Length: 172
Image (cartoon, rainbow, N blue to C red; front, side):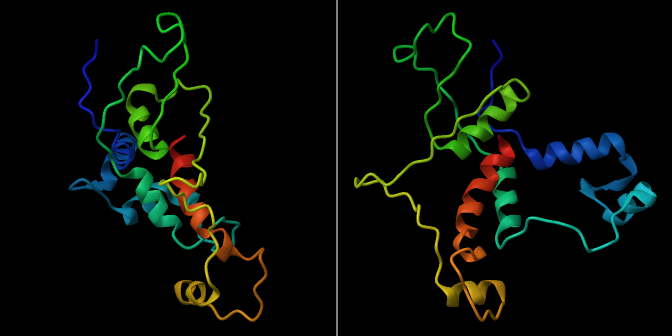
């Protein structure tokens, strides 16, 4: 049996190692030299700033959250499991972001389906912020925008939800 160290995969380190394998000359003191990377990629660099993107306030921080390593251990619960010795399925209970991080090391490329059941407000002690609306003044300050009209379809209603979902979807 392989003994694990209880740390999730360090995605940033893995990405840098992949770049190091492909382009060793662009890594200097463990950091990516983007100017050298642009030279190595030559004509394949996007220089036109006009392109379609899905962006929102906090997206970069959400990506960093997905890449932040985690420590923990997933322990089996044989008593609560059905057909423990023959099943090919796992039911995992816990904070879904932390669990996804921990699964990266042992199960990367082996998982066929991930079902994330988000918590809902139940009226008990646990309160999940499922109302992601923000007041207009705060949104204007954060995004440095001056808006004349603000309908419910505007981005400020979805930013917190996107910031919660993006790291989970990225890892899944």
